[in-house]
Structure formats: C-alpha cells, structure tokens
Length: 258
Image 1 (cartoon, rainbow, N blue to C red):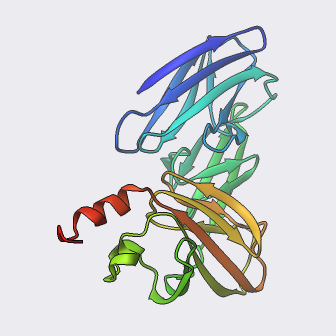
Image 2 (cartoon, rainbow, N blue to C red):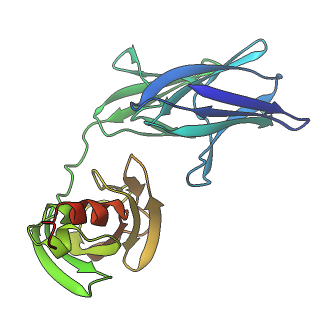
C-alpha cells in the first residue's frame, strides 16, 4: 500500500494506492485536526461520498476501507463534523465489515446477504435493520446480439461469451469496438438494482434504455442501474473495446505463408 498526503487550511487529503493484485480491506488511521469529516473520492469515476461509519479519537480518525486489486482512493477530511454519526455495524452480534459488501448511506443499509444488523452511533444511539430476504438475481447470460463495428457484422449468440473464443479467425482476432445487445423483462421491485457484468476486457460503456449508466475499465464490473431500469421491457447495450494486442496475437498464430 502506497500513500501520499497533503494538508491545507480547508482540508486534509490522503491518496491511497493498492499495489497488490488482490483486494485488500483494512481500517485506516488518519491524523487530522478535530472537527473534520471523512469523505471518499473515487479517482476513476470522480464520485464523492461521505463516510457513513467511522470512529474518532483524540487527533485521529479510523476509517474502514476496501481497495480492489490495483485500486486507489482519495480520503478527504473537511470541516463540518455532524453532531452524531455511526461508529459501528454489527451483524448477528458480530462486527460487520462496512467496507466490503455492506453499504451505509445515512440511515439506510444495503447488503446482498440476509441478516439482522445493528448500527451504533457516537452517542450510543442504535438502529436495527432486518434484511429478511434478498431477491434472486436475474440471469442475463443467454440470447445476445453482437455487432462488430469494424467489420459491420452481427451475430446472434445463444450464450454470452467473449469473441476471442470464436472459431473464425476474423472474429477471434478482432481488435476494436463491438456491442453486445439484449432485451429483457423486469417486473420486480426497483428500490436498488445493480448490474454485475462479471469479467471484462478491457474497456466498456454500458447503456440501458438509450441512456449511459457508466463506463468501466477495471474490476469490479458492477453498476447501479436503479435510476434507468424500468418495469417491462429494457434494452441493455454493452459496448466493449479491446486492445490491439488481440489482433497481433492472432496474426502471430497464423501460418508463415499467411
């Protein structure tokens, strides 16, 4: 883990970079003046969010953090400490890691695993959250259409697979942009819905019902699509751009006479 820090009159800024090829989770201890509140700034998306769960002690703030493989984050402390904030989350009586799957936003808690949770504040106020069940995920791995922009070709896919697995040389060695497109039905609740794209290479932009919901270029390949998802028929488009090395690798595999 590498970090640098900067301090000015209005804020303390820390940039943390995970140099490992694996995810890491830990509690970061930051030396900051009293009265400054932590925020997390995402250098990949530009997004900012307040830290919902943290602990303060004289001259220090403890913040639970999780960084993906090769991931990074700005931890920024600015004036404006609230009168109260959450300091811990417990699940089934055990300490829960709020930097992993659990997300706390104000008094709302999001997790993908059922359980009983208790949030405790700095002033010992508690809030109980009972997630009785989590809906089963909708499988979108079947029946896609794939359009190759550089070849002006379209294919119907029974299964969602990488074009680098195709038997045809022109498609397997294709380098450039291609769009996976699929329509699907959604009739369940839409209070919070995430789209998990699994494993991708190397850059992708995701459109849902004609609106961009985000661009991804590193794990985790997951997006919150709640605002764009609608009941009924939805059109999902995943535009993937790979690297020239795919074409070069395919060329080297050809016989010398080709």
